[in-house]
Image (cartoon, rainbow, N blue to C red):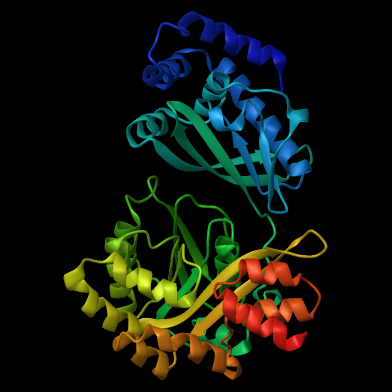
Length: 408
C-alpha cells in the first residue's frame, strides 16, 4: 500500500484521536472526506484500487478491508478459503475508514451513516483497458467501518455448461413458458447471480423479448442483442424491489429479473407480476427447494399465508437450489437441487404437504429434477469430490450416507 498516502491519513487521525467518542469517529471522518481536496480523496481511493488489482492477481472472489475483525490485515477468499495476506501490509481500522469513505459520494455517505450499511458497485480498469466490476458492501463493526468487495465475473458461463436437464431449460425459457416464477436459491457466495446472468444471456441469444433487471447493486451489465435489456439499480434508479416490480408492469416487459425477494412486499409484487402474464426470475437465501417454498410462505403475514400458498402453487415453474463445493483438485464446482413444479408438486404445495416433495424430486429425474444428495453422489462417482465433502455439503446427511454406502 502507498505509505505516503497512509502517512497523510495518519496525520488527520492524530488531530482527533482521543478527542472523540468511538461513535463519533465515522461521522467526523466523513466530514473530513467531504472538505479535503479531490486530489487527496482520489489518492485514498487509489489505495483501494491497488488492492483490487492485487485481488485480481490472486484470482480471489472476495476481499475484506477494515474493522477490528481483520486484525489490521487485508483478507482474501481464494477458491472458497478466507485468509489474511501479509504481503498487502497492515491497515488499521481508523485508516481504513478514510479509504472506505473515499469510494462514496455525499448521498451514499449520508445513507451509510443513517442505515449503517450500503450496497454499491465499483469498477476499475487495468493497463490493457479491461474493465473489472465489483459488488461492494460497507457496514459498521464496533463503531468502525468494514467493507467487502466481491468480484463480478467478466465472463458469462453459457447455460449449456451448467449441467441443467433439457426439460428444466425449456421450463425456464420464455419461448416455451411465457409466464411463471423461476427461483435460484442458495447461501451467499453460491453463484446465484452467475446463474441468473447465464439465464439472461441464454434469452439474449435468441429471444426477441424485453428484460428488466432489478438489482442491488447492478453487477454484470448485459448488452442488448436479441433482447432489449434494462438495468435498474435499487436506490439509484428505483426506490425498492417492490417499486421496481410495480413500475416494471407499466414498462412492457416480457421478463422481470428481481435480484432478491427480500420481504413480503416484494414477494407479493412478484406473484402479482406472474399473475399478469410475466415471466419472473429471482433469488432467495435458502438451501433447498422445500425450504424455499416454506420461506416464501412464512415471509408473509399469517392471514396472507393461505392465499400466498395457492398463488405460489399456481405460478411456480422451477426452483434451483445450488452450492459451490470444493473438489479434490482444490477448485469449486456447482452442485444443485432442481424442482420442477409438476401438477403433483403444485397439489402438495396447496395442501401444505411439503414433506412429500422431496420424494417427488427423487423420482423426477426424467423430468429434470434431482435432489442435492443425488447430484453430490454423481460428483462423488465421477471422483470430482470426496465422500466427506458430499456429506458435509448435503442437506439430508442421513440420506447422503445411505447413497454413498450403496455405491461402496
